[in-house]
Image (cartoon, rainbow, N blue to C red; front, side, top):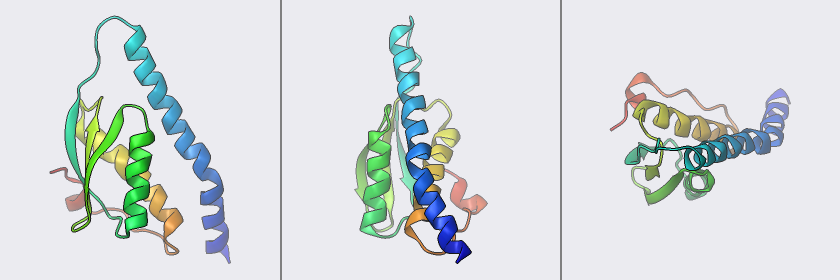
Length: 126
């Protein structure tokens, strides 16, 4: 029963979790537009996923694309991979960690059992 309550809590908290990401990303883009100079460091990044189903892959791809400053360019199902264009990717590890955090939250909602943290090998970007 407690697992069910925790999962319900994560589902209820999701709009706030994702909304905060959208707002902070929007403010970052707006700040870059309104201030002199250009802080953008665009890059295409390959992101391996733990998502396995088409629904999970589609959901994370859409979450990324709906966040200002990022867009999912391509997907692959085997092995599950996204190619993401990020507008602010000066620190590739931080960019990967940000996407992994969204994926972790998504998997905690879509899968009944708790998802395992990624191993150190899986954390290394390609």
